[in-house]
Image 1 (spheres, rainbow, N blue to C red):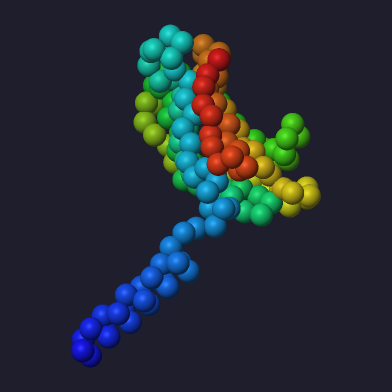
Image 2: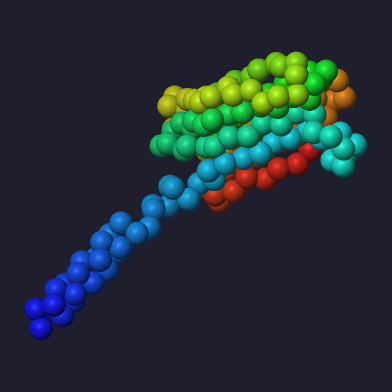
Length: 152
């Protein structure tokens, strides 16, 4: 009898804890990672430039986390990160790299949107193959928790 009551109490506590702590808030549903790449031959060839990382969204700012960049050996590329609200760029960072065919870690990059009411709502990561003028991108939106990728 005592064992059964302890089991029931344990189950009740577990259910209560799961209901309180079990799911994240809506802000945590924002996109958490991205891959942007520029690929030769219209997307069918070798990767020329690629960037990967995560996104940590805050009330007005965004941190691109663990940004890593690959540039094909013998080629040069440009990596650009833009934090925007609608069509207005709020903050931007950029890097030029010539490749050795290995991954380079840039690290965490903060885009500051504190000067704008509502802050940064969109992040766009561009990677450009400077030798062949191929641009890959990842457009990430806080509101619908998604990133869209492509190249031109």
